[in-house]
Image 1: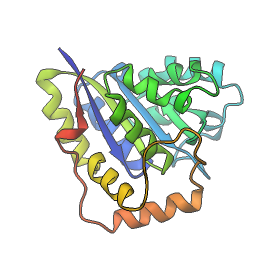
Image 2: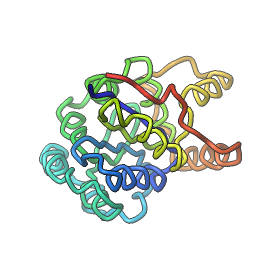
Image 3: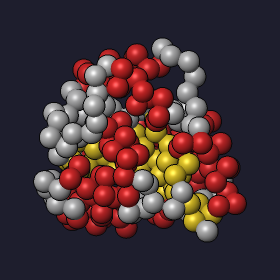
Length: 215
């Protein structure tokens, strides 16, 4: 039985490391997706042409095909495509989720990110949390894994500094956040950098059971 595992990361580097380690552990590249905020600048090592494709429809098709390269960091960079998601801003995405994100069309709820996550087994409430995390500068790695390998996948995510999404939501609510708003303004590059500095000053992060989202 397949289950969906999701890891949230404060930066693209940690997410790409998780994707690499999952592939090296024998998980299929076609089962791995990466979505990362790209406000202000390209993620390290990402070719500008891949990150800023002018035609997101044809770019998404290319990205979906190239998703098989999501092995190491170089392969991930080669397969990343740039997309603009309403309410979230510019993102880089790799894997089968690219076609779903681009195909949802401009103006769709969360630009298709929430729908794309729920389509692979993420509960809608958590999909909204993950969309908000990306809006605030985070990166996501999702994996479709056999039930017998879920614990192994979670260990790999934790070893690459995945954070606890529910703990993060508690922090947001303490600061006045009331829920995901698809009409909210995307975070600026400066706001994202401030968030990343604040979170990296906290205790070491770990992906808990709540990051295991079952299909």
